[in-house]
Image 1 (cartoon, rainbow over the protein chains, first blue to last red):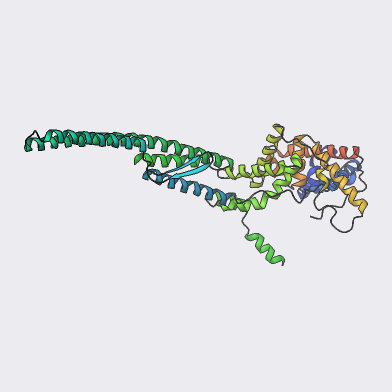
Image 2 (cartoon, rainbow over the protein chains, first blue to last red):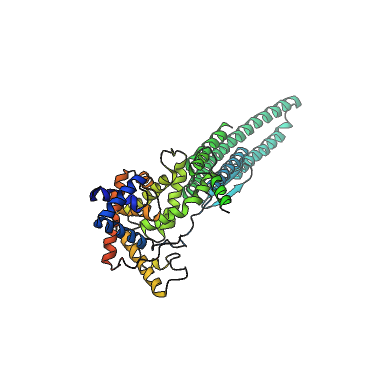
Length: 217
Length: 206
């Protein structure tokens, strides 16, 4: 073995990774070559110097429980989505807006629209009753009955139309609001998720399922 | 109780077994891997980027990346090599972004672990050891990145040449060449700083 070959293998000898046969050849060479022997011993000395650099004992611990924290959070997210889905189906709302949750039980009535319609209806009824009272004296009983019957039918039809239109509008508005809220909750969860380094994709998928389920309703 | 401890050791699942458990759905296996490796990873990061706040962040980032990647990790390399590879990449990214320079603050080095806590060395020896520790830290930090990585993984993390080759994805011969050059430069730098070979500090006890 020459000096070049010794240098190539010297690291194995220095870190005691040389195969026994190689170690023997290296030892033979350094026994006969002072320069290589000095170089190896200077590296050994250097290693003792290097050992003086220790890591501080208070490096700080990395938060643990990767595996356990994540399923809990994922389960919590799933549970939240389920509850929200259920509430949405029942017409209740759980909203996450401006950093806080808001909860409303039952489908929200639209008081202004309904009460206006009802007030108009009541006024119409009163007018009709007054008109009936004015004319009833001049008409035969049978004719009066027919007329009253017709008026009642007309009134019922009008009322049904108004109520149905109001309900449709209400439903559309509530549905749009619910979709928007769900998207916001989804975005909020994704943000939290991302911040904690969690599975945003999984949450999005869950969100998709919930949306799908609520639309099938 | 050497027999009992040997028995206990043999009962502990290997890294490979834990990886397999994790990939079969037992995510708690990762906790065991973290407990086993986090200190070592932190030590490597500490020496690669220098002491400071970043060490904890970078360790956290490394372990998170490992958690995310472990599901698809094919055990062609050792888990340890793979984990160190992630840590190295995290450190390189951080240094590329310039947020953490490879430097060592001497003030930070006043706490140098258990150096000198053993009874025996005189006050002068303790001071010398602390000075040497700072000089070594500065010299390692001044190495070119490729050499520093190999020196840290070999000298301080105790990886085998093969494990380092896996972690760096380079041939074995390249690892040894970089180490040889790195050690040569360290030796030169310490001599330049006046560290003489005649009075090395005591070899580490742990």
